Image (cartoon, rainbow, N blue to C red; front, top):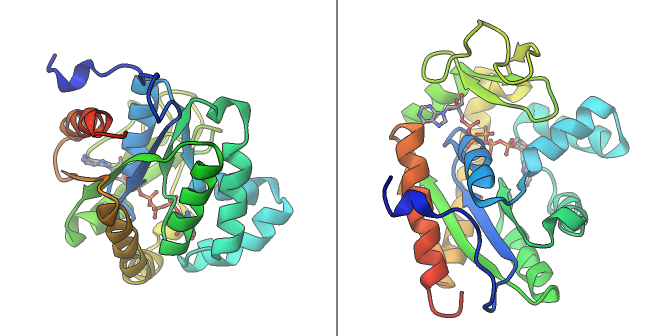
Amino acid sequence: MTNATRVTAPRGGNATETTILVMVGAPGAGKGTQTALLGERLGLPAVSTGDLFRAALREGSPLGVTVRPYLERGELVPDAVTIAVIADRLAQPDAARGVILDGFPRTRAQAEALDRLCAGRGTRVMGALYVEVELEMLVDRLSGRRVCSGPEAHVYHVRSRAPRVEGRCDSDGTALDHRVDDRPETVRRRLEGQMAPMFEVIDHYSERGVLSAVRGDQTVEAVTTDLLAAIERCRRRPGA
Ligand code: AP5
């Protein structure tokens, strides 16, 4: 075990007793895979706006009706809707010690809104972790992805992370589906439309000195190790 993998739980006692971490990366970069692993490791809830939107779709709630056309087209949901969803989620008791945000913020306006939400709680984003992956690899990852229909939406890949039994989730045995936005034409639209706002988010955190980039084109385990090391560096930053 390396020093990096020894990071187990968030430390309190400084300005950021609430640990807010943000995962940034293109669609398919591995944010969801890594957020789930880091959440277990650090004892923090993993909060994915994509998962919250897909749950709303399945329930057929008013939020689901609002977001459906955006998800189906592979476009970003309007900022006002997304920010309200996150504000509500961060107000839940399990988020009191912090969260790892997966897929939020995705625009500069969302990043600024998150800063305000954090300031209102006397905290701030401790680290923004950018998982960097080349375009061709993103297309392969998204086209081969399968997701379970259980509440935790476990993620697989037909080649790199295949389930033990084809088409079935190892954890809860539910059927594995192809996500509606993983169709080739929607993947293209997501990659074309979502990169420019993502780079604005990267600039936002770079300007604040909290951005750390890790190479996402390694094994899942190697990416986790690098992310844990990056989180440890974030913790040691003055004022973190
Ligand atoms: P969301 O669910 O957030 O999707 P995304 O950002 O497009 O990211 P993905 O979930 O596609 O990829 P990921 O980076 O999590 O990769 P994963 O770990 O699954 O958002 C969906 C939609 O909701 C958006 O398009 C938008 O409409 C809306 N939305 C969400 N948030 C929003 C916001 N803030 N504002 C506005 N709209 C919003 O990995 C991908 C595949 O690769 C898997 O098969 C996995 O097994 C495999 N894999 C992962 N890591 C590795 C590795 N190291 N090696 C080999 N394979 C790997």
